[in-house]
Image (spheres, rainbow, N blue to C red):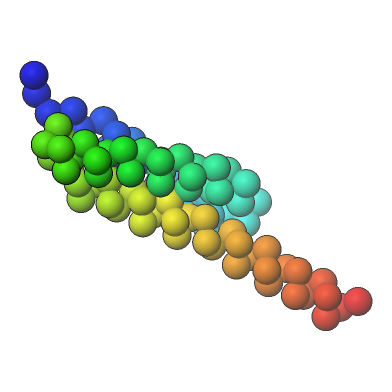
Length: 89
């Protein structure tokens, strides 16, 4: 049976989409959900790569990083919005 690289590829794809959604202010909810999925898929993909079932550990790692960054950016937006509202009122 060949290498199964689906989870690492899925993590990278979902992580990139989540990162793009995170950069778009109005899609912050999608960014958080996709970031969580990218972290889950990336962790599974890294586990498969460590067991020798897959050979794309780099894609899985990149998916995890993109998922984390895609989740952090909307949190920064929300914190800045909260600070702006508090200072205005």
